[in-house]
Amino acid sequence: MSWQAVLGVVAAILFFWGIGAYNRLMRLRNAIGDAYTLLDQHLSERAALCTKLLASLRPLLPSEQSALDSLDSAQGEAQAAAQAARAKPYAGDPVASLAVASAVHAAALTRLMSLIEHQAELREQAGIDTMVDELKLIERQRAFARQVFNLAVSQYNEAARQFPTRILAGMYGFAEARSL
Image 1 (cartoon, helix red, strand yellow):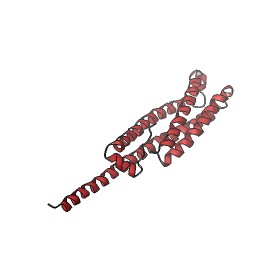
Image 2: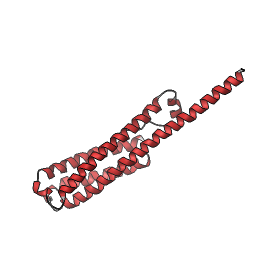
Image 3: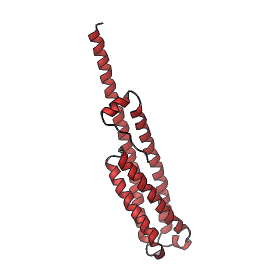
Image 4: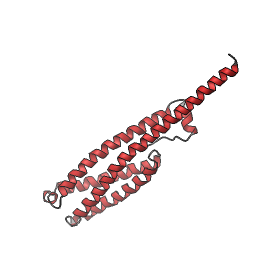
């Protein structure tokens, strides 16, 4: 076998390996997007329910407007961050902003839930108890969706870091994704 044939075989192997590695990175990056879609659905459900809960609680808790305003503000920030992450859920900066906004939202929501828990008569008014139970269910579902998202990010990052795929990832702009 001549050196030209050997060179042709090596070039073909590298070419097909490159196609396979690129397709694998694309598939894993798309899995991040799919996982984010599920997470985003739960974030949207939580936002709608929080808005409804805030509207019901405002007349019932006039002395706790700061807690309600805090949740309302955190809700707006979380929705804006989720919107930014929706375009590129595999990009680091939008997901980092969403992680911070989600932490602020969770703290504000915990504060409000504590207020509701300490006022038993409040839970019985205007279906508050039902909304609180729905919110707890959505939070559990969101936590699971977050785990699925983080798993997808981990698998993508692991594949992009492996040698020699790391070289190809760098050439084609497959940057490291960020988990929540």
